[in-house]
Length: 453
Ligand code: FCB
Image (cartoon, rainbow, N blue to C red; front, top):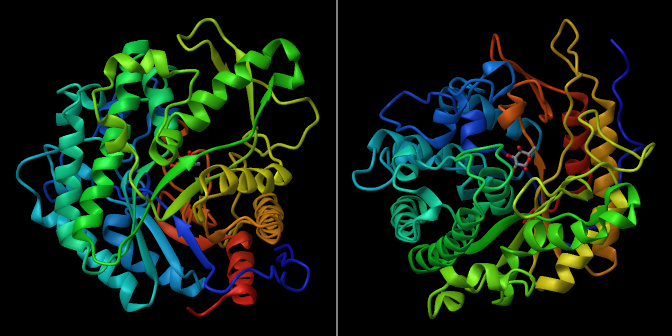
C-alpha cells in the first residue's frame, strides 16, 4: 500500500469562529429501499426504468442502502469529526402520493436519523427537495402545474411539524437550475420535456414553491435558520472563443440568476422577464422573495458555454480550453474561480454563505485489497478549494460553513455508480464502507480548524 497522503503539517485556514465542517448527501442517491415501508415512486424511479437513460441500466433501488445502514453512516461521520450533515427528505417516502395521507414508517425513518445525529452532536441540515418529485405529482403535470406550490407547502408543513422541534437548519431546494435545465430543456432528466413554455412554467412555479416553503418553515420551526441551495459558477465562452460570448450571457441568466435573483433580489433577470411574464400573477414576486438566513452555494468548477441552436434556449455546455485543469470526469477545475464566486455571491446577495457542496468525481478510482482508495486527485482538489475558500473569507466573503460532496460514493444520476464522489468508498456488492485518503485528510483538516460552538 502506498503511503497515505496528509497535507503539509495541517493547514490552518484561520477561519472565523463558529465555522462548521460538514458533509452532504441526498435521498435518492443513497437511501435505496425504494419499495419498502410504503414509499411511493419518484420520477427518478420511473426514469431509471427507461431504456438507455442511466449508465449500465442502474437505478437508486439499492444505492448505499442508507435506509438500513444510517447508523453506520452516522458512526462514519463521527469518526471523521464531521460537525454537520446535510441530507434531503424523499418526498415520496413521507407522502407516497405526493399529497394526502402521510406514510408513518417513512416519517419514522427520518426521526431515527435525526435523533441519531443529535445524540452524537452532529447538526442536521434538511433539504426538502433534491429532485425526487413523487411520480403521482408528475402525473398531474409536476412543476408545470401552478398547484405545485400548494403541494410543496403541504409537504413542508408535514415535515416542519414533525422535525422542527429538533432540526433548525433547513433548505427548500437543491439546484433548481440543474433540475429545470436538464429536465425541461436539455432532455437529460425527468420529465424529459424540451418545450420552452414548460421550462418557464417550471422555473416560476419552483420559485413560488420556494417562497411559500420558506413561509411555512418560518412559521413552524422555532429559531429556524433557513436557506436555499444554488449551483452557481463563473461562466466563460467555450475555449475563450468570442463567437460563443452570447452563450455566456444566456448561461448566466438561466444557470446563475433565474432562481436566486427573484428569491433574494425580488426581480427576474431583465433578459428573461418577457418570456416568464405570461406565467406571473399579481403579487407573485413578493411571494417568491422571502427573507432568508443564508445562501447555500454548490461549487464544482467554472462553466464553458457554447451557442447551440438545437435547444430552445440556444446554449449548452461547451468545451474548456485544451490543456486546462480538469477532473477525471473532465469537469473544469479552477480553485481561484471558487474564491471569485464566493466573493461575487457575497456582494450580489449579501447573505451569509454556506458551501453546501464541493467535491471531485472520478470514474477511474480503484480500491486496494483492503478497500482503500488513494484518491490524490480528490485530496488535491479539496485542499486547493479549502485554501481558496479561506482566501475569499480573508477578503471579506461571509462564509460560515463547508459541506463536502459527498460522504459516500453514491448513485450519481445519469452516470449511475460509475462516477464516484465519496470521501468514503462504497463497495456496492457488499455495501462495505472504507474511508479514502481524502476522508482521512478531511478529518485532519477539521481537527486543525474546528471551532467548538
Ligand atoms: C450536484 C448535485 C448532487 C451531485 C453532485 C455531483 O449537481 O446536487 O446531487 O450529483 O452534483
